[in-house]
Image 1 (spheres, rainbow, N blue to C red):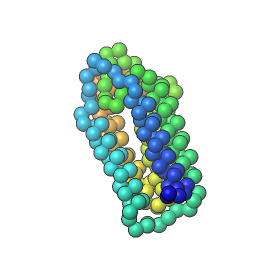
Image 2: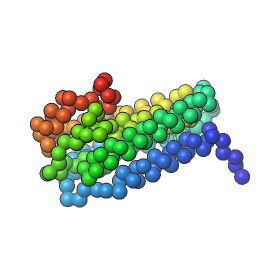
Image 3: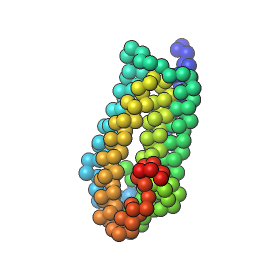
Image 4: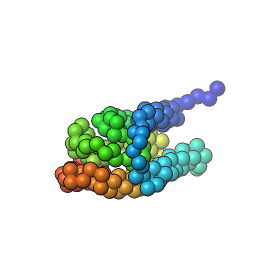
Length: 189
């Protein structure tokens, strides 16, 4: 039997929690609303998944790069769990408006409560925190960048598509919301 140390168990457990979170978030879909996705979901899946795959492939088989201290494992777990909590809060706040594909319902309103009070895309901020945290928990110096870098590119593509669709679908109310809130980082950007 193989002995699993915290070095192996924590990142794998975090990935398992991430998968459960995404399954929970995907439990509701809006039927009858046309998608305005423009391929952005595929970009996110490929870039985010590719980053995780690359980091874990190196983690299990490549020559070891510079290692971070054991504190990175636990700091990474804390950052990842914080990101999961933010993403869950964002998904719960959106309620029936949350989907994996870009859709704007005819009756859709601007959601500006909860985490959406400060950020237009708190779910993606949470996902990026998860990527950074899981990367840190791997304890290799390059892992956070290897996971979060492609994830950021994927989410930026997605944000552009979503904001265009919401501005077209909701109109002036969404454009005003865009003017008074930041995209991903509170008070910064």
